[in-house]
Length: 243
Ligand code: SF4
Image: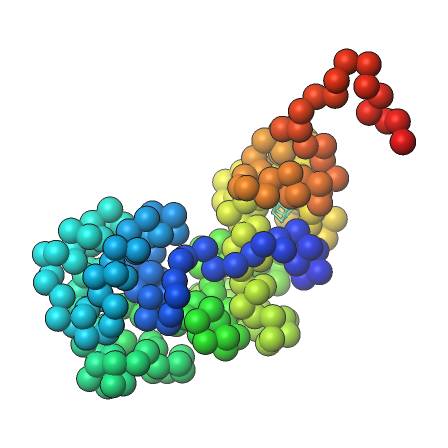
């Protein structure tokens, strides 16, 4: 399944835009209850206005709230960012720390966020258990645990440590594009032969294909052996089976 996941999602990556660890920490705080796309639409202006931890610590609350308003829960998030900036300045000389223990001690940084930061900004392997990840690994029987920390440990024991970050991205990509919560695209899924939950969603090829999403949809369908229904029809007289 790991091999199939890697071949299915060669484009898997952190979908939040950032250029340094502090920016990724801010983006992950903003991503709670929001979408990566929405977060990416506000962060260029936020990163430009607040380039350092000290800038967040000294931010005008109303101004910061206004800038991040569209991501939701903006008051809590502004609190977290101002507190995060202050704590990084006070305890870490303005530099974001790079251990799980130090990161989770910062305001607004939970274990999931800390693992995202470790894996993507510091190249330290981390498993990110978000809603997609938990749902998929339970469907696959990799674990039956519900608690994210227990899921992290259970999957960590199955997957080589060096692959923790990329496998997290691949699983989350699969959850966003193919194995949806309510209607997984079982009939158009590259993992169907190995998946104990095959049949949770439609198994009919074309019905399932209609559920597959994202820019790499033709590749995802090809990996599952489903004809790409968005490909242009053959020209009249053209023999599609011709060598
Ligand atoms: S076969 Fe269905 S349940 Fe299993 S991974 Fe694929 S889409 Fe998800």
